[in-house]
Image (cartoon, rainbow, N blue to C red; front, top):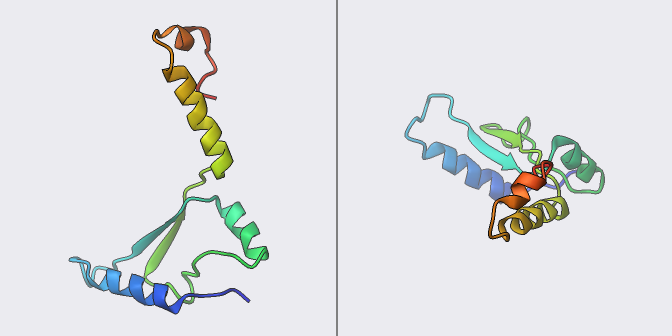
Length: 99
């Protein structure tokens, strides 16, 4: 069974109620940095994500598809390596630096 946080549900409900557009079908947007597939896999391991159907009814859940922390760290390190050069020669000779 998935765990829930009634305190979180109440807090997000109150945030929605404070909107200046009250009554205009206001939704609080919850951003989850993971991909939907990763969040679903985490659910199998007793984790999960917000249930906007049953508990977070006035919320919208958006998955951002950001890689795990290790992939993000590696990408940042590669950008730092490129930026460490005193010339733009690295950019000119390394055409695949964005990948």
